[in-house]
Length: 263
Image (cartoon, rainbow, N blue to C red; front, side, top):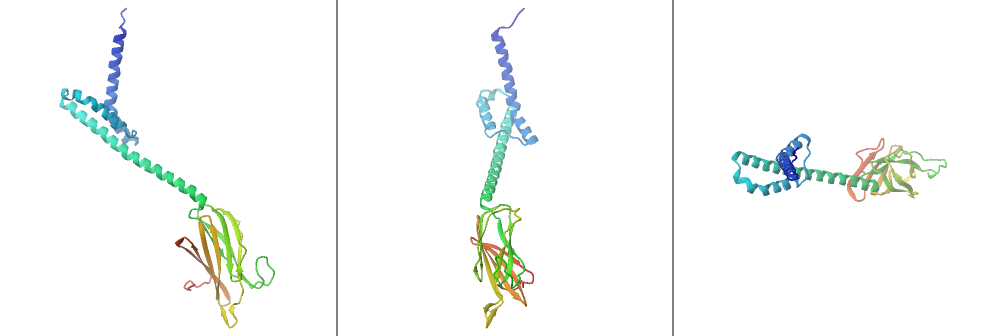
């Protein structure tokens, strides 16, 4: 029985391998193009232009020996490779930009969790009561008082929260809230208080103020609580501002406070 020699077998394998490589190279750009339009996938940047450079090395050897139809195919071949490479570059830049934005967003969230981001607290004030005639812890005897409860605004926690109340009677004890979260429901109240008679007997005043100096991990705030006597009842309004952000201002009004009143 006759068997081909090793040299003949190697030659046949070489011809088959060259044929397979030629077919792959011939259909590669069109496969990339169809894959891109079908799935949106594109080859890494540089693959198409590198393959085009390799193919271009061999073109001068057979360019003069091929007919016009084959030359047209080669030109289309090169153009498809170039088109896929351009799309790969454009899409790669978009993906890189998207990855950068995702990384920046994640970094911003990390920083916001550490500093508090744009979160802040303010104090909701109850209707003033009094003068109180019984001994009550934290409230001076004979004074009018209003209870202030902290309210949280934002999605990131605030750290190192300290509040220093200042009223006409002087500074009240500071309150350490430590870390406040959006889900905080237990809050220590602050009693804002002032004597019922403001000013001198000959020139009584119907207005007074308390201030809440609020220090947090993302800055310092001041909430001014203005009390105004309307008839025989005291009403209130408040304004929250931030030291390093002049355009930050929040206003709150209690029942019965004239909103056209300047204070």
